[in-house]
Image (tube, rainbow over the protein chains, first blue to last red):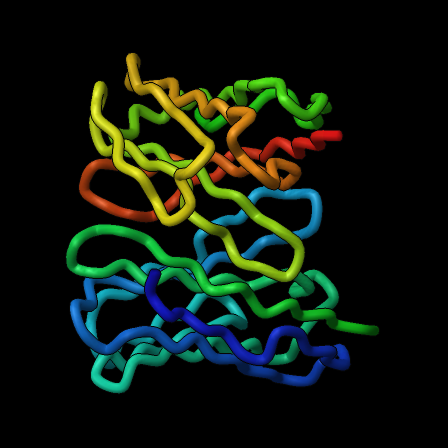
Length: 111
Length: 112
């Protein structure tokens, strides 16, 4: 089992504030890193699929960066809104094709 | 509408009974996956299948079995050998050229 860690486990953000959190993963045998958003009572949905070192992806106010050499990815939320409240999961895919999920970062945005 | 369905949403069973969780997809995806989630933990891979009539064990396959007789279906059987079967089970599928997961709504299994 691979070591994919997310930190912090949870965070509370005031509406309008920006925040970021981390996914760390093995720096060898990298194939891809995915970010998913999992809202309460819904299914997880893919946010970003990242494959290249230095990748930066953006979707609205949410963006992600990738450093495969040091084995980490950051997810940023700019100007948090209550609808951003969710658990954010990262998944590491190694060169052999197996996925390993982190435990997630739970984000709560309060008005 | 294309998507993944899991049924039922809630399932209750008595200890010692086998139970099968359904997962169907009409996305024409080659790969299908079963995950388990426990409180405070991430998704843990139970089994996955990249092609019909073939499947591989994930990280926690003990006490579970699967079949992949059709591309659109990947049922999971939780056997009486699974020591802690009470959990939330998620099924996912992915296209053959990508690992991007498309998830079903999940089944919450309670065994007493």
